[in-house]
Length: 112
Length: 114
Image (cartoon, rainbow over all chains, first blue to last red; front, top):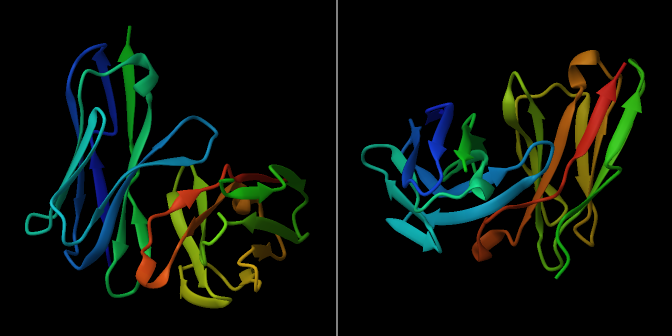
């Protein structure tokens, strides 16, 4: 059974800092990994998608990496801004069963 | 291009009643997945439909069911509601099949069971 863990559960940083969010998973047979952000009471917004055959993806100030051998993915946010404050979730789609498993998220607060 | 839409956005029901939630995927998307989100359990997978067929199912009781129509719109039904069913129900669509499974989420339906 796929388990996804996100550490830390919460993170508070001053504006302008670069930061890394971590996502670890137990089963390396993944189809893809997707990073989302969720604002309070809202749905999820897709940030980056990494296919199983890829190592990383970049979009603006965001960079996500995938290392299947170690069971880890990281989301790097450069030059953080107060508008980046949200909960960040990673999700693994299983290559065999086709189900998606989500981590519990990291709640990020960026202070002005 | 319009995003994923979910109706209704908010719902209050009484224990024992049943409820139907609706999800309209992005145009051209054939896969629809449903999730339940609660503070204690996080985001949990309910089921996935592709071309009107249920492809995957999570670990939820049979009171939770769904279906997908020929236009890819999907409905989720919960019968005999329990207090613990209070949650944010999220729907996600993706192209599906060989086109891939990048998920796009709707705003959710907030269900409160009293």
